[in-house]
Length: 328
Image (tube, rainbow, N blue to C red; front, side, top):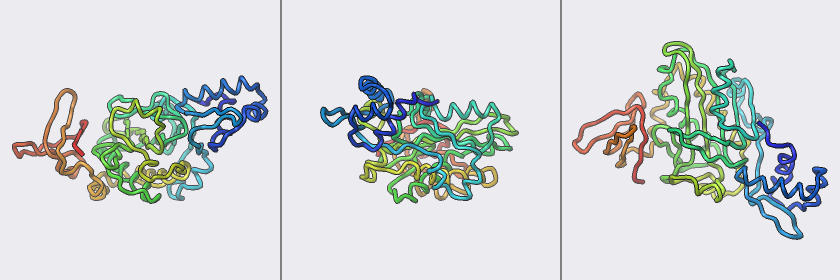
């Protein structure tokens, strides 16, 4: 879904973060200055803050790099590019995952890739909303079709985490870890999340929508609604300007080959590397499954990617799912 054409044009003009006079904006869009004011005030609905200064005009509080398929493709490796069926970039969408789940039901092929500039109902784990301000972060989903059923792709989210770490390292972004089962962390704070939604036959063909939300820059006016410790790449790197298209292409370059080969190699091919990035191992933690809670010390993951927790009595318990909180 696209935002109104005039609003998109204003965003494109303001994306440089510089001041633009109301007169110049009105002339560029062939509308009145009052219409410009109305359009710019509507940017708050997209999570974008702006400034208006008499004699200077309007500017966004932070410059934007809007996503372009051509620029993303420039950063995609040849191997990954051969696995892409199509790349869609939506100005605004409820959720990239929800959209591709629907497209899967309409027989969309493997390698269908969806990005969004803004999500109105971004999906986190356990039904939580993923805060999704316009043009600030990475909201990405990939549709892939597997032949051997959901059991054959058990642990896929862990392998996806490994791919994300590889992509970030390619951009010289370090001090990143993985929190079982689906989170990307840095210094005890959440940087991103992975959501894999699977549908299809128990022992036959199935489709998976692999979603990734990655914080590049979270505006202050959006952060107040996040109910957990969080961070973004601008804080980690100290750089206010991050190259979204290049990072998006790099992520696809690492994600797609892992997804493509996964049925053949499974989680075991990635476990050693995942364990290197494990930021839970050895920590005191509480695992929640519904209303149940389990306290103990995390002892890593087993060879199937399931969480190991040592209870106070020394017994070891294995968990395939759950929500973990820990003391950093």
